[in-house]
Length: 210
Image 1 (cartoon, rainbow, N blue to C red):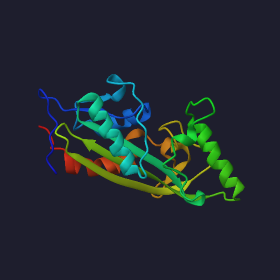
Image 2: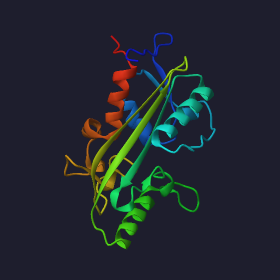
Image 3: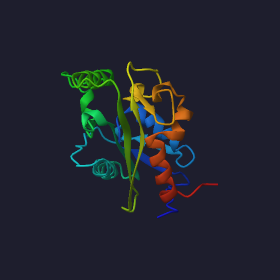
């Protein structure tokens, strides 16, 4: 599959199946050398995509296929989760849902507080944890590529840092002493689950452009 080239009128174009502004910003940074035109799906449709898969890979592919049908562009989707060992891998596939409050709005400070409360209930102050990211790419001729990567580390409280998004303020990677939210974007780019998945994806799916 190596050597896939996304070109239309001399430009590489991809629609990203996410409404998460943090993901869009991070993915745009990761793809800056490969894609000149990256658009959110909201520019094509306001349709909600149901994530009914049993795995990160399945959910990513569901979203990428739906985005392709709605936009007609090559489509990229990310499905990621935060897994806390002491909580049996929760929130996992439900990482985004854990942030949903009663009014339906997402607030990850609320999700982080839920994790802290559950750890307290188990009388656990520390736990191993990991971020997982699956990426699915559907190109215009229907060819598909799915990859998955993860980064291991631990949960820390209280939350630290104002960078990043989601669960970044409570995660310290095994090789680091600061949280993802305390890292500059370029530093996180070198070690994150999403960065690792993108390296895998790019090695399979993109031809370097002159």
